Structure formats: structure tokens, C-alpha cells
Length: 420
Image 1 (tube, rainbow, N blue to C red):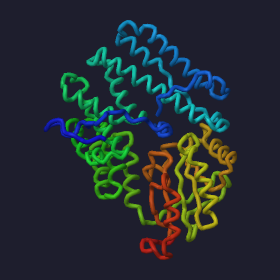
Image 2 (cartoon, helix red, strand yellow):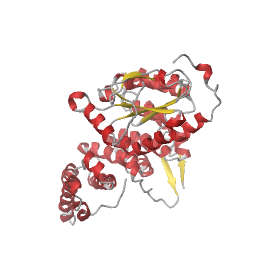
Image 3 (cartoon, helix red, strand yellow):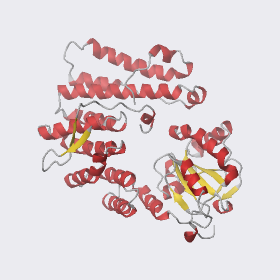
Image 4 (cartoon, rainbow, N blue to C red):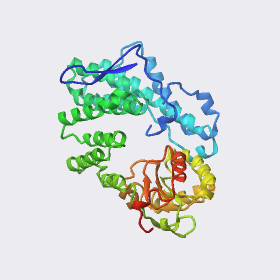
């Protein structure tokens, strides 16, 4: 049971008290998202899978590093030795071919990636014990908190650590990193459903922005607040994006923010798209789908979460295509010269994906997806039967959205409609 408690009048809300404090176990599949388990996968089992050789190699490197550190564990490890061990940890490389041929590949890959990140987190903790004020180690401490919040699903552990550090007040080089980790962990804990954390997101973001107004990471905090905690408050969301654009115009994500505003302002407004289908060469226009619901799926063949959702999209397409629902894919695959078009068409052919595909050809920089602020994949828009944008975030509840639209009265939503 967690509850939010202020530490002092100047550090309101920087920690959580816990009863019977137990770190939360991570969710395996969430780890892939940008994105969990403590059990190591047996080397022998991995080695027995011919398609998983790259994972074996990564695991062997980690094992060798761990053995070296273990061999000297009876003696205190120096900060330099620990940093060397950290640099020796290698992440597994995802192999799309192995994924296509081995149904267990993703689970193995995620376990090995989690193991590598767990090794990092544990070694950084040892580094902290040895030399908490080592300036060269500051990036490692920040990495620990980021991994624990976003990858290992332990934001509450981060909140506890940074609260203790900020209360102590003796680790000045780490103060700014601690405040940033505090804000990030609060946002992530709120995503886990903790109501106190959710209520405090505006406060912790405001604290960081007040303390470090020129730090560019403030933009990320504003955008996280806007994306996740203002879905029922579009005016606040607009204000946050405008604040980010005004204060952080050079942020690398700034090009997406006008598109985020377009998503907000575009709800219940006509949605237009014309393109050449990469699979057939036909000219496709949303205006041709008269009285149909259109599912617009932004995706890429290099996006593992997108590929994981593809079987469910195929099933929904089969279920609803005779009930007035059409699918369109908008590809953020790589440019032609990097094989992007071939990867898109090859994947669709191999996996029998027959709905139209808009190949933009510029990856994340593709003009149409940038104009709609697409900075996360997969992202799913749904256009209603009147050609109006109904939602820009149906990737997690697509079937429910389709069913609701199919049940609407014929003229519902028609007020905003224009000729398609």
C-alpha cells in the first residue's frame, strides 16, 4: 500500500511511504516497449536454439563480465572496475528472421534484455556504494533510475531512493538528476495506476521546471504530462504543448508538437488522405470509403510492438470487413535506398496483409505522419462513417471503438461532416 507523503515544505511530494515495502515485479511484455524479469534464461536452453545465436553471444559476454566481478567479490571493487563491468554489458540484438520462425524468440529476447538491464542496475548500485560523489559516474546513476522507472517497472523504488538522497542533502552533484528522476518516476508510477502519483504529476513537473527552467529535459516532462494525464482536458493539453513549443523550440521532438495540436483540434473534423498503395499501385482516397469506418494504422516493419499487434489487426479485418470497416496502413519504414519499400511489401506478402499501405519513405521524418505528430508506434486513428476523425489513440481498444461506432445512430456525428 503506497501513499504520497511530503518530506518538507520545500520538497513537497518527493517520496512514498510503504507498508511492508516490496518492489513490484515487472511485466514481461511491457519491457519491450521502449520497454522486464529477474529470472535469467538458461544458457544451455538458449544455445540449443540455432536462431538465437546472437542472444547466446550477448549472454556469454555478460557471463564473462559477471564472472570477472564475482572472482574479485571477496575484495572491495573499485569504482573503475565497476564502470568497466558496466561498459562490458551488451544488449541482445533483435533478429526479425528468428522472430518470424520461432514463436518463443520474443520471450527469450525480452528475458535476455531484462537480464542485461538488471545487471546494469545492480552494478550501478555497487558503484554508488563505493563512490557516490564521483563526477564520472553521474551518467550511470541517472541511467539506473531511468532503467528502473521505464524498463524494470520499479518507479516506486526510484522514488524511495531519490527521496532519501534529497532528504540527506549531501550529494550535491546528483541533486538535479535526482529531481529529474523523481519527476520521471512519479509519471511512470501514475501510469501504473497509483492515484496519488497521478494527482501529483502537475506538482512534480512544476517543481522541476521551477528549479531548472533552462534544462531541456523539461520539455519531455511537459509532453509526458500532456500525453498521459490530460486526455479528458484538451484545453490543458493544448496549453502544455504550446508551453513546450514556446520554451523548448530547439528540442529534437519539437517538430511533432504542431501535429499533437492537430490531433486535438482534429477530433470530429474531416480526415483526408490520398496515396498510392504500395502493394497494388492503386490510387487510394479516404473519400472512396463511403459510409465506412476506417482504421488508420501507423506502423513499420522494424517496430516489434507493431508486428506483435499484426495478428490481432488481421483478425479484426477479417471479422469486420463485411460490416463496413476498412483498414489502411501508413508505413514509417526506411527510405527506398535502405530497403524500406522492399521490407514493407515483403512483410505484407509473407503475412498475407492485403489492406492498402501508404509507404511514406522517410521513416520518422515522413511528412504526413509528422503532420499528425506521430512519435510513437503503433498509433491507430479511427475515422467514423461520416469521414470525421473519431480518435487518435485506438491502438489498445480498437475493437471496442469499432463496436461503439457500429452501434451509433446513422446521423450521429454528422454535424461536423463535410464532403469527403
